[in-house]
Length: 98
Image 1 (cartoon, rainbow, N blue to C red):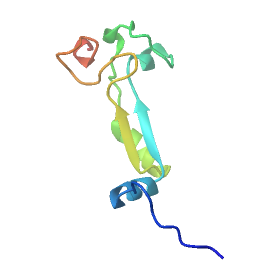
Image 2 (image 1 turned 180 degrees about the vertical axis):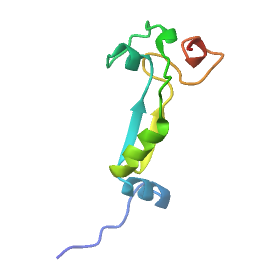
Image 3 (image 1 turned 90 degrees about the vertical axis):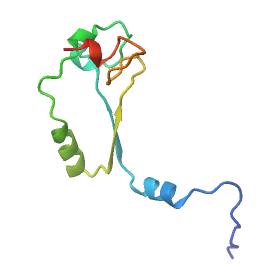
């Protein structure tokens, strides 16, 4: 016979449970490494080489939707320090890219 266990400690909110129910989330890492054809950057890659002239973000979203993903998380600052938005805190960002 199974006894009902009383909840103890912090419990997830309805929003957290709903998030977990979505199951598939895609993380997109897009930066200079893409143009160097390497997986890991060192932070020494030239930001001028980051030049996504043929980027089609709608294609990314379409493919993810078609394959069942519910969320897309774009990593805007990478471990190598490159930032996908112009910022006053570093020159290693899209502001130094064409």
